[in-house]
Length: 215
Image (cartoon, rainbow, N blue to C red; front, side):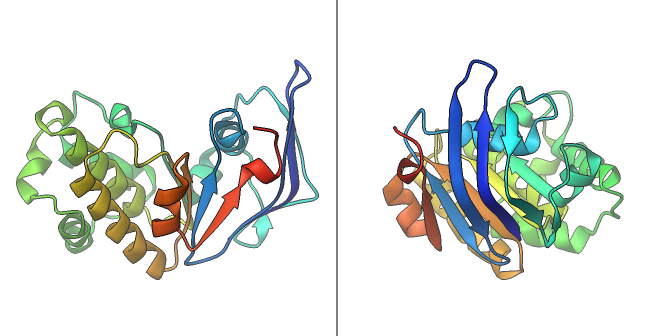
């Protein structure tokens, strides 16, 4: 699904990061591991940020067998990104039902109420939360809601940046079970974490950036 071969980044200040080959197959959850400074965030920024300041090099860069699109509408329709502390991605002025409507409208999808209910059930979210704004939910509920929005558009690739940070163990357990269900439906998942132990439990294989960059 995501195939990067001999992928590297060079920043204007001369900093160079090399990632080698990164493969995330359809229906697979791949973990991206490395402590601070190994280039985890830089890799995600290089793929997703239209204003990324560095120069990108690669031998091959494919998404679902086609050239990896540049950051923009085409890429964002096919890839869901769940940022670290993703609760901040929710608009505090909108109800969760309005978030769902905008997600479907922005991705040219009809609202499938049955699918929405199924996803909510898998994430242990009550239907009553749809009428609330983000401030009326716990941090764990907000994080699960962002995961729902990411999954709702049925991306070919889902990228999660440090999803295990700042959430309780119950939410973490729900999230891992949910991701396993999502990947069984064919979505590829790239999950970034500084916790090797967490990735050992959750991922099908781990990409260790310490093997490429000095950190």
